[in-house]
Length: 530
Image 1 (cartoon, rainbow, N blue to C red):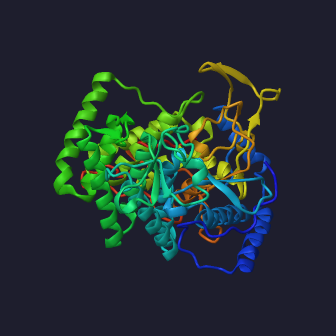
Image 2 (image 1 turned 180 degrees about the vertical axis):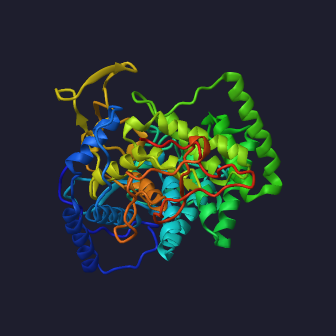
Image 3 (image 1 turned 120 degrees about the vertical axis):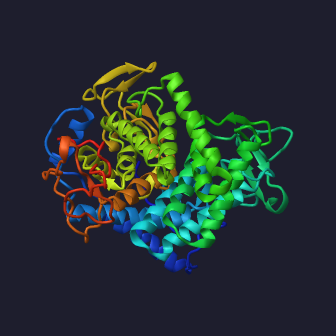
């Protein structure tokens, strides 16, 4: 969906802590960002596109050529532009929102949008900021993490039941928020001006309105963000804030019988994987209170899986992928701070299998999640191709909501599945409907999305990009040249592959360190695509 980029906006209520610029300077900034974004536009080479098409069809179609220096420069500037826009416009009170405009030519937003999953995208943005800090070690990343932690803490204490994670919480007097909460969940005749799932904050949060209807995706993503921030940040104050919030949330779930209850009659079940992931984080930040409970829960989860013979699944090619998306987020949170080596290997094995069964979907999120799960980065050319290729295809800002209808495209093969017609193979990103977080939706949708002037924040680009920077798959253009995948990773006894050391820049391939027993350490179960 094309259109002129919105001009400067007044600082949003509770927006990120950025210098206050005079209107003319702000207007000049947005003009320059817009002009620069236009200049950065680019396309994959024909051979690169051919490789991605082959991956989608599960067949070999040539060897992937890493992004060139110029392409890496374009990708970096694109990510920086989304970072700036998100910080300036999409982060009121420390929680991520999309923005609705009267038209794509309008300079000012008229309301927030896509708040039903604001907490989830905020948790994933916290994850991205933590990785950005791990890569750059710059103060701006710390400021972003601090702002998001304050926003999540404020939201979790706005309901009158500390530890409940609402879908969103914002200032009741905010003119951009009023149009949303006045109808969220449907109009409530008994409470004019409030939707059925919109509630006024209590106590010292009485100036807020929070959105109820607990959501497992929100809880999973917030936990991943907190677990990742704890792992990478060593700031005592922020760690204390993370610890307090984790203990509040887990204590609330425990008190409510491991249910997600907003106290307004809206209750949903916390599945065993979600409970285990939160207890893992709680055992990390407060081991004396939660280490034993986590050990018991892990044993119970293993028993349940054995009894039910639950199959390992990746993201389904056709149909709803949200359950698998949430499952991967929980598994990553488990893996991030797991200290038991045997359990960690089992978790990594699950992540590996999820990626192997998902690779044809051209989804960079499970690809980069797989690579990030290991201290020694697996050499996987398919994951590298999907991450680099699809992120490079991601459009420059602004990211407008857009519908797609491929039903009349005779070049797209079709298949009947899940009660509807899908494209047989994952489509290039430019042919897919545009969603607030693209990787939570199937790449085989023939129809979907909406053509409307809603600007999305770009968390779906920033999350895999900054993790990719950390695992050296999307390096900056001025770093060491990307690895040549024509090189083969050296193999040890039995043919097991020795993978690469975890670093923020590529290193020379070399033999893996060995344990005192002679066994190879690292991700020996990681696949190598040949």
